[in-house]
Structure formats: C-alpha cells, structure tokens
Amino acid sequence: MNKNSFRDKIFITFLIFQIWGVIFSFFAFAREEADVQPAVEIVNLHTCRDEKMKVEFLCYPDWELKTENDTLLMIISDQPYVTFTIAKSESPVIFLKQLTNSVLQELGQYQDGFKTQVVLLAGEEAIQIMGVSKELLSSGFNDYYLIHDLQLYSFLFSVDPKERWKDYEDLIYRIKESIKFSENN
Image 1 (cartoon, one colour):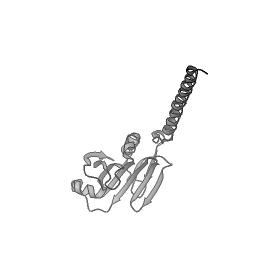
Image 2 (image 1 turned 90 degrees about the vertical axis):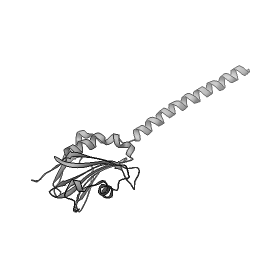
Image 3 (image 1 turned 45 degrees about the vertical axis):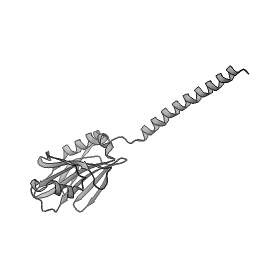
C-alpha cells in the first residue's frame, strides 16, 4: 500500500464522518425545533364566561381553569408557562388615579422600570402595565387594571420565559380585545 492511497482512504473516511456529522446535526436540530410547543392556534377560541364576576372573554375549552374566591386562573400553556388571570379586588381603590406607580408596583410585584399607559379595555379606561416580575425575573407581564361598578378588576397575562412572549402576542391580543362585562347573564 503506498502512502498516497492510505492518505486518500483517511481523507475519504474523514469526509464521510464530516458528512454524517452534518446530517446528524441537522436532524438533531430539527428534532429540537419540533419539541418546542407552538403557540395555541387562535382559530379554535370560544366565548367563555365567569358568571360570578360577570366577565366574558375568548378561551380554548381545553385550557386548565382554577378558581378561588374572586380569582380565575387559566393556564394557556405549561411549556412555556402562559397564564391569564382575572381577579376582583376588595381594594378601596375606586378611581384609576389612585393607582400610582408605587401602588401598582405593590399590587403586581413588578420589577422597577415597568411601563404604564391608559388604554381601553372592555369599553372602559384601564391602566396597562408591561413589565417583569420582581420575584420571577424570567416572567414577562402585560396586565390591565380597571374600575367597574366601584370594584378594582385585574386582567393579568404572563409568559415564562418572557423571551417567548412574541409566540403568544397575537393570542393574548385576541383574548384582551374580547373581554367584556356581561351584566345580564
């Protein structure tokens, strides 16, 4: 066996391993991408209603629902962890102007630097907050506070990890836009 043919065999073997490595890496990457749970399809949403709080909104029938006192928690996804919470507070707040940044920070446990703006929600003025949790730095929030019938309501959306927010942005928008109070249940 001459030196050139031996080197050629080594080179060809090396190339084969390189090609197999690239092919294996491609399929491994494709598998990892397939393991990521996609955002919920928004075409299958139905009108849901909480009779106690007299609130209607779009939801998916299979979402896990937990209720306790005047709080309703819907788990939209567990990977990433995406939730929608509706809460009615016994707080003495009766005007939106009472919800200063310090009051809001205490209510929502937001990290410093959260952003607020006044928006319309359910046909009423609300304060929208975009921020990050003080306790769970990986969670992103988009929360709304409004006064309805002299009661403080919170409509809270969270995504953990916050880097996946974009995946659920359209769904959250659709749910938010569908929220309304249903006085005549």
